[in-house]
Length: 163
Image 1 (cartoon, helix red, strand yellow):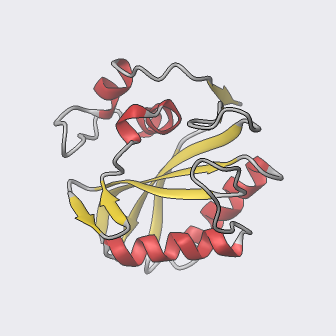
Image 2 (spheres, rainbow, N blue to C red):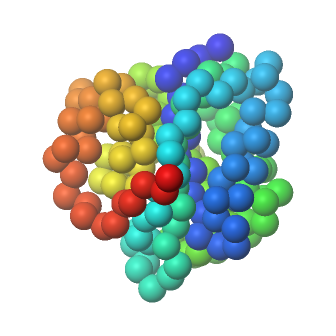
């Protein structure tokens, strides 16, 4: 089982908190494949890239998994589909969005899959929840901790913790 795998989760359509909870529950249904290690609080965040839409709810989770990166991505996309996500343009509204932010210290670039997520280090909605649960995790490309990346972040869009 591979530890230090971080998933960024977001929703801005329908019951945003409910969508996050359902996605997490679906992710960990089979503990032989995925085991939940840590989960951040939920955050309400401004939409990134296309601002004229409803705010997102976001969180981050750390999992332990026996799935290799491609199989994990396929599993995440299947959960998105089952929760009502349909193919749409970049940065469009969505009931659920599941992204592999980090897969341990692996660096991978292949068709349709880049690890670590190529924009995670630029997005407050990814880094703030990650810094909550794994401030000392090291980004394998930049060699900085998540806390360090969050502290130098230029993205100043709203990220408000929901209690």
